[in-house]
Amino acid sequence: MDRAQAIVAGCGDPKPEELVDGGAVLVAGAGRFVDPHTVAVGDRLLQGGSIVVATGARLPRLPVDGIELADGHVELLEARQLPRRLVVIGGGVIGMEFAFMMARVGVEVSVIELLDHVLGRVDQDVQFEVAAMAARLGITLHLSTRLERLARQGGVIALQATAPGGPLQVEADRVLLAAGMVPLVDDLALEAAGVAYDRRGIPTDPMLRTNLDHIYAIGDVRAGAYQLSPVATKQGTMAAGNALRGEQAAFDDRVVPYLVGLTPPVAGVGLTEEQARDQGLAIEVRRQDYRDVCPVGNVIGEPEGFVKVLAESGGGRILGAHAVGAGSPELIQAVAFAMTGGLTLAQAAGTLSVFPGLSQALQHALMPRPVHDPPYVPRRSGR
Image: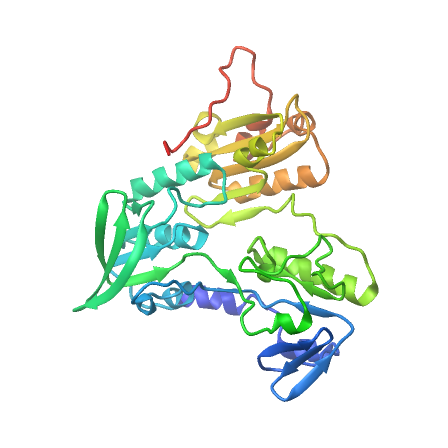
């Protein structure tokens, strides 16, 4: 923890005084709309020709008795002592990151997930692989399970839930609430400004404008947003340019690389196989397991993993890629560059890779398959 805090302290994030030096006026307090051009902070009224809503997201308020006994991920990161048993509520990104991290340092971990799979927005092959890795680490996954109640019993927290097989009770020393994040639109009085929103957040067009052309929304508060800091940073810059300089910059959400910080890591970009098929696209899917082509994975002791690439049939435009394994974020970043540059699968396959290197797995995934190879068959979790 000391090492982690030292790294964070050395990151050099922008400081408020730097904004002031740049000419910004900072007003501390809770802001709420009074009308389409006015925001109140306490007794002070701020007026602007353009307004950007960038309030982020918060933990959900689950209608579960005793949910206040659960910690958020920030509280758990500040802990100086490991629990013997941890129950994670939610099998999404944050939930699985903490489950893997705690399991690898000896904590007994259980995950309670309402859906019948973990990592709901990622490719199904990745979901299957992560579930298998979790099982090898000793993580217990309670899928299709609804949390009903938390209560303190002596020195432990007892969780009651309903699982497919009937009632379930699990005990823990600490509980992590990781059931996703919800857009923070509470108490903004968006109705006073006439800004449309719903439980998913504030809808915008590609130029990040709400239903009112002069009001923008960026980051996690947007409806259907990728809850990733690089996305919010990029959108903040774009919204500022559009609002202040009359630019017409549009955010392209087709190429958004993501990372799930497991060990080994998970990364991806673009469409999943399921999304592509749901859209009726004619696609080809190529997959390469690390252990079959990449000696570097064995050398560094991390042979687990695979790379999967989706493209238009016939070696056409790359539509997405997904990977599990050491170095997967860098491999996916390379695919993101290729997608942004409009490379086809055939063009990308003609690019040489570093030898020896983890990128060999990506190069083999891009290469055409011999006609005698069996067709790719997705690995499924059996759900």
